[in-house]
Length: 116
Image 1 (cartoon, rainbow, N blue to C red):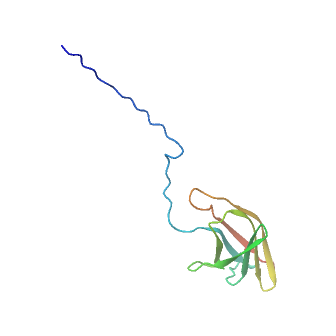
Image 2 (cartoon, rainbow, N blue to C red):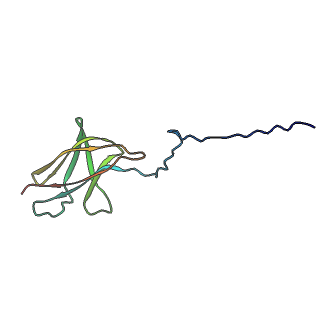
């Protein structure tokens, strides 16, 4: 009689760093979204808003379809100081740190209040 040989294969799947996939949505995220308020708390929709990162100034623009939200620094991580100017008054933020996420920046939303 003949001899039958059989093979048993045991495979172990080991996840690696490349095995994890992230599906990213195709849109750009603003690093900063800012609301500017006057001393009474009312939104100001025509201020000049600038974010400074390492000496570079980035103008934030009024974002269409929002209630007076200024947005900018698209997909750009950094350490920002945000300044809003309106009618001779200036409001300045503390340092705002924005970090990168898996797909997009981790946006920061802040309110600035202009002095009376």
